[in-house]
Image (tube, rainbow, N blue to C red):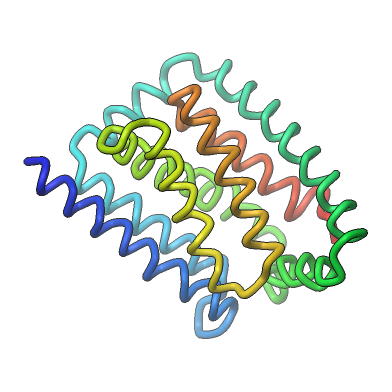
Length: 215
């Protein structure tokens, strides 16, 4: 694939992410499928597109997942605990400082309304948590870092990851996405491991949404 073709494919999949995620946060649970099914479907589609566009994608993931697996999962768990502590402190501070924080945080947990806790947990554990890292870091950040440089690629993907949450019209969700995007993007920048980031993201999702929620 030529440089021009790679550039076009990167723009195509970035546009697909915007078209899938922005309406997802605007519509929330409306329609025949709720937020969790649509989020899962969007990630499966984007990861599938990535695999179809980049012949190195699956071999690189396989090598990452088979090399130092236990160490990466352990470090992912430690990083998830650290990020949860950051949000724990941020939750208390934001509620004290911003009058809109209470409503915004409650609105985030409103995504769970009408959804089975078991289904949400299974989708977070096996599709959404891993899928977000497979796409945002394992595909997009890796490719943009190769094209733009590690620092600029990290910044560009973090900005896009944050921007797709703007459709929620929830400042707290957008702020949370920015913090998470910076955290996992930097983690990937330093380690190059999608597995480590996926373990961190998945465990953090389960803790924040189901095990130790802030609302």
